[in-house]
Length: 475
Image (cartoon, rainbow, N blue to C red; front, top):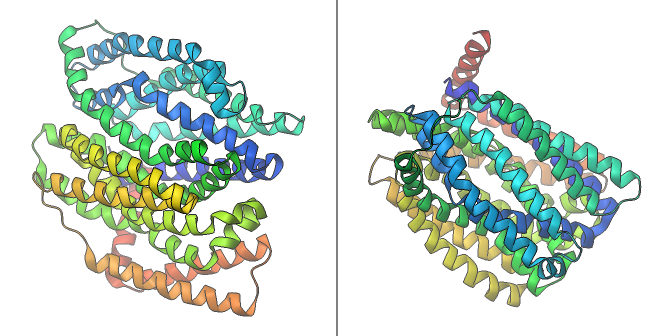
């Protein structure tokens, strides 16, 4: 597997799907309003929560075991057989407590939730298998297609006067296309069910499920608690700010996704020096988009929310700044977290997750009651500081982590100068329309890129990566 080619291919996919999703959220936020968008976000929050017991950590275990290159058919078949039990239990519980679920969301969507969890779990499993086969780049088109279908179906239904249920129909349609196409591309045939292999998956998955719980807490717990303690409009405003910050993580997540199966293979071969070298080389590009985005947000947080989504979302401007600052840590955590799991220590990742979950839960309740949606952002950021530090400590027990301080320092200085330039322009030319906002962002990107490439070391690294990509495309 060509690491650079796969990472950039996945990055291109992430740019495509995130652009489509971001555009869809912006359009639907204006058409439906904060309250109805809040219902959709609460539906997604519950979908994320119930996906954890429905999967029970098996997706991560499947990727790990298949990427090791041994008994792939047996592992896949055993996982499918075992997953039927928690899936059936979760669907049954949803139907049993559908009245409470409908009341929490604000509409009768419990049945849709039961259907969505089945389609989502099976469709995601196909991409996990492809990644385990070291065919990470081939999952790119699947991820884009899902959100193209979502945007198209939802947009059509909204234009016909349908409300928030249009977004849910679109979500189900996108997942269904991903399910069919994904399993069509999987090359591993079904084999026999093995109790021994199922036990191996469970041993890995029982720790992986804790990490999945941690990811849910990080992604959705703040929204879930806001839904309990505040209004659906508050949920909508907070989640819009959160979605903006996800855009800057595209490259980081692409790199981490590509890193895991390759590092897992090297772990099986005990090639730890290669893992160390990969970690060192991937930290800088992982932070390359996040650093300038944070500085740009410091200057234009209100304008980004108000001009793109609508005036009612500007209440979350400080939330946007806090969450964008938190993404600085997450860009490093994505590399460290996936590396720790790749060296077959999901138990240590689970310990770090449990600690951060505890902090997250307590701080969310306390700080939301005190500071509202800003408190939720502070709670999430604080818990992720602890999570990142613990992952770095545990991973350092197995491999040497070399942090590229000089390169990160140069990127930070370039971003700070960029922020000064765009602020000065904003003083002279008020940023009060969407075209002007997009224009100032383009100016910031150009200034940051020129300053970054002014460093000879950064320039050589960029040229080397582009040459590697060109060779991969030529092949």
